[in-house]
Amino acid sequence: MEGVFKGADDTEVRIEVGGRTLTFKPELVRAIYYGSVPAPPPPVQVAPPPPAAPAQIAERGEAIDALRMLRSVARTGTTYPEYAPRVTEARTVVARYLEREDGAPAIRGAIADSFHYYALAESAWKAGISRGNYADIGADAGLIHCAPAQRVIAESKQRNPFIWRAKGPGEATATGTVIATSGIEALWACAAERLAAAEKLWTGSKKD
Image (tube, rainbow, N blue to C red; front, side, top):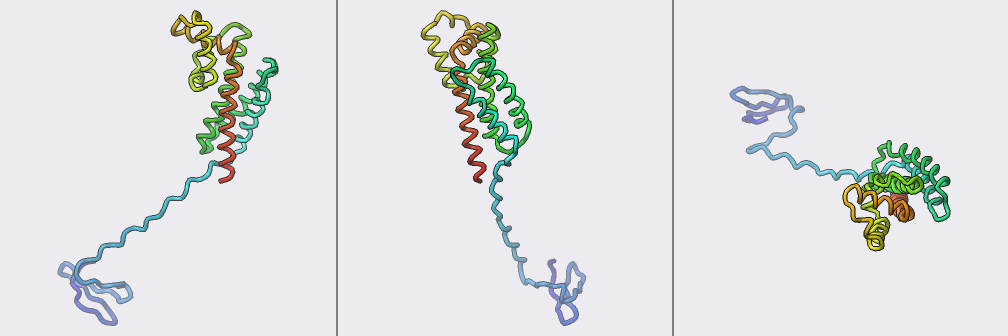
């Protein structure tokens, strides 16, 4: 409150405001300032709390275990009838995890990528057996980010350039054919790489 101090005693404090004299009990007056009203102190800067560690939800560990199981069977000597049911089992477990929001996008992305490559290997393997669906395999966006698969494709273009003459859908079919016949292990390598990344991130989050 701004005004003209008119005096004070043990019973009241008198301040003139706008031509009117207001009285206050002394115990209600904390301080009287003469001259300009002092500026309020700057607000106290409170540091934001550190980001919380990702929640350790059970589904994440289950998804990683399911991918580890796939990694254990994704090797030379495994047959398609042995591999395909494992992918189906892992699909359910991984999907259940991906439906949860756990605040760990890096781990989530690595798990999703890893399963995608394992599942793509199953689809490519099936296409190679049935002699069909090559274009869908070749058009899969995940192939672009899989260096081992890209090496398989590049080697095929050097050895058999005539099968790569077609563009558009024809090129996708050629890509899918090469992956189905020569690139299953390359997809497994990419799946294992992304699983290793998920495992590393997961271990680090448990230490926080």
